[in-house]
Image 1 (tube, rainbow, N blue to C red):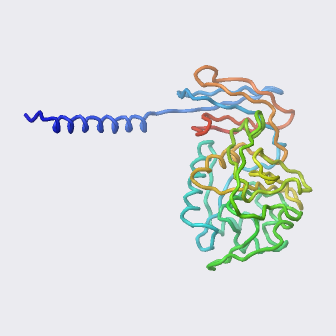
Image 2 (cartoon, one colour):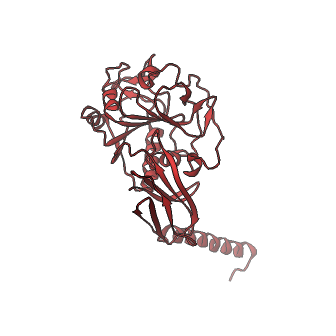
Image 3 (tube, rainbow, N blue to C red):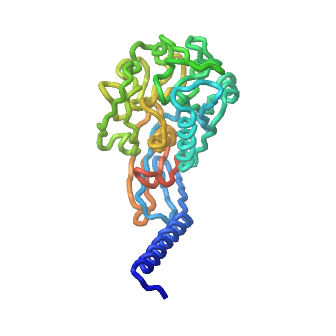
Length: 332
């Protein structure tokens, strides 16, 4: 039998690699589960977490004003229209957002124009739309106040915008270039100079201890295409991160109706998809406030009591911090 050092070294290497592969198989196939239960009793809500995980968790009661009874989320993606950025990257980013929203038991459908157009023309305000292609299709927005998109927002529609300056362009089917719009600030926000005009990428790290942003572990901090909430004349909520007054994330009541625009000042990509999901899942609005907040470890205190408002309260629970394993939002 060959017992040379080279032979022995090769055997050890094979055993080492086999051990690593076995460990990967075990880790990827280890079953874990997480179930959440919330029950309300007057001005309190008791939550329980049943899980075989031992991670930390966060439980927060939110007053979102009882606004917007959204029961479906869709994202627009149609490669028949030009986009701002690489189409394959945008599609991949939307898939990552869908994956991350799934952790909260939220389904995101990626739809082409016909379904988006149906939602808007039928004034389906129970469906929120994510726009991440950096532009809008001409059939719903052509840079004028008569665009169908505004009728939907007026009726109570909810839209989430990211990847570019909201409303600054629209896309024609089959075209190679985007059409520029000059008056997009006034169209979407009813005020001038709201959207940051510069194109250089800017970020902020100012996270206030105990704030709503901090409580929900929201880490989306790009302000490149943020809006200056100080120039708004309507109700709004700007999260912590801001650069020279431009918020990275802002929830804004539509100025000519009852709908809402959530403007994200950065891009949706593989790295930010989890933060965008963390913004959408708890049903935040322009009036959202934290009522009560608790952080714990599942193995030590898997249950607790949170204070509620007299009206509808949203209870948002999730396991994990920088990387969320699972979670759920309950409206009670």
